[in-house]
Amino acid sequence: MTALIITIFIIGYAAIAMEHTVKINKAATALVTGVLCWTVYIISAENKEVVTGQLSAHLGDLSQILFFLLGAMTIVELMDAHDGFDIITKRIKTTKKTKLALIIAFLSFFLSAILDNLTTTIVMVSLVRKLVAKDEDRWKLAGLIIIAANAGGAWSPIGDVTTTMLWIGNQITAANIVLKLFIPSLVCLLVPLLIMRFTFKGDVVKPYPPKELPGETRTPPREKKIVFFTGIFFLLMVPVYKTLTHLPPFMGMMIALGLMWIITEMIHAGKDEEDRKHFTVAYALRKVDISSIPFCPGILLAISALESTEQLNHLAGWMDANLKDKNIIAPGIGALSAVVDNVPLVAATQGMYSLTEYPTDHYLWEFLAYTTGTGGSMLIIGSAAGVAAMGLEKISFMWYLKKVGWLALVGFAAGAVVYILQHELLGV
Image (cartoon, rainbow, N blue to C red; front, side, top):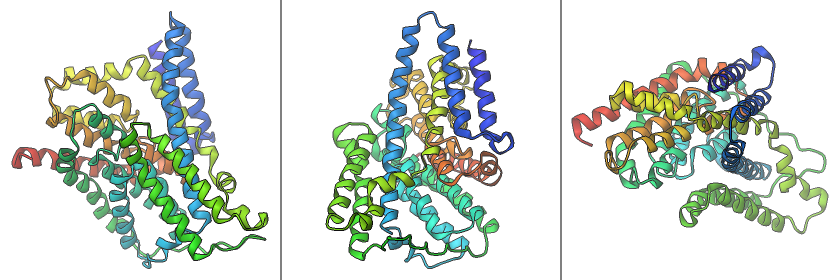
């Protein structure tokens, strides 16, 4: 049974990677792979109720991700419909690729630490669309955003799901994770950024201003500023809402969307239906690329089948038994998080190592926060940020692997070396 599930997962994963060769949409492949894995599992299981219970538990997590994605993408589309991104794009005058990469990278790195890597990627990729016309240039910047957002999320207790898990599980403390991981995470970004200076040269071509549709009016400056700044404020309040209420992040995103809906309705209340229809939530929802959203639950269904059959636990246990050295185990788990979701991997590790043996702020937990937070950048479907960028920009798996994956690997390795040296030489 487990061998068949693993085989289905590998075949499905390969089909996703070779999407442009097999000519089948990755979302369709991911959905079929996920459902087939669970079908094999339940057919071979003695207790069907246990399997359906496990699936229901995973479905809760999947639905949270879907609602979060849909809410964030709708808020961003609302901001875009009101020309809100003009507030930033008009201040970015440079067309030099190296300067633009620097600006985008550091914006993503620090924004991810106070937002999270998924929301940051959605916002920053939408911003880059306003600055760059050529697909190849835009995809390279999107790849840099993924690296920067994942690196920025690793050193913040609210920047990445796995770091938050370790924080809530009392494996790390907020102050210590910032102190220990800021420099390694920064190096993880700086190394790819420095390499890109030699390969990403010249000027970008800016997009032509969009033509107004019949009946469409441009947004007055006051309305533009209200929608843009309230949108950014509500997005920033999502992690705060989670911390204060202990509710899942999607609840904060839902209330943010509801408040944005109310505000935009009030702003345009006095206008004719024809004038206001391009600024409504209904219009923003039509612009959201719904076809890319099913990919996320599809691939997560497949991974959750591996988790439910305890394959990830067995893998983590094998690494512990055979590799021994924590400087190999943590990067190994980080590299694995590029292939399978980092959340179940970290959960398995939390169950495998006790706080008695490895107390709060132990070297292993901090190293694990870095490696699982940044390791997913090596493959475009290795992190939530990558999956979001893939859906928004239609970036192929193989293109990312050839053009960006190796940069992420070099940055990941450099940051890991810095973390080890920082601990060995400075005792930090």
